[in-house]
Image 1 (tube, helix red, strand yellow):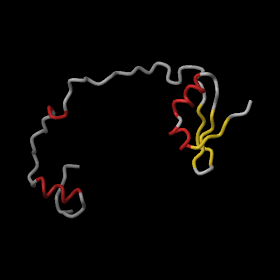
Image 2 (tube, helix red, strand yellow):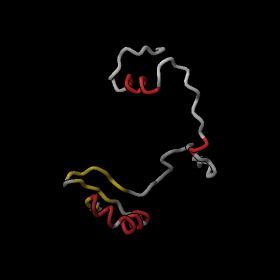
Image 3 (cartoon, helix red, strand yellow):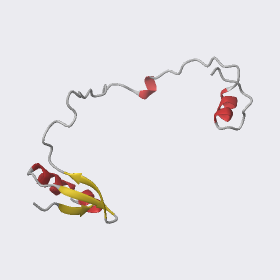
Image 4 (cartoon, one colour):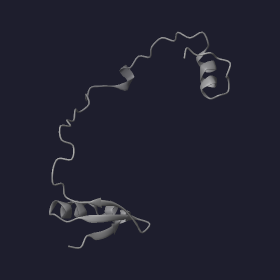
Length: 94
């Protein structure tokens, strides 16, 4: 059995055809700049046994997140300068 070699560009442009062929039992070696980097083949078993997927809450909004109150003595601007390495004098509670 010969496994067809295809470029990542071919995979991107013809993914529907390739996935249908994989469903029918074919396998492909994916290349990037002529180097083999991956194989696409049909699943023979559950690759993640015991793993369950929980979908996110569709009603959740990041706008509903309320930041915790600031308890530091320095200003937020001073602390940002510390994080950037521009103000090493700020002491943290590490």
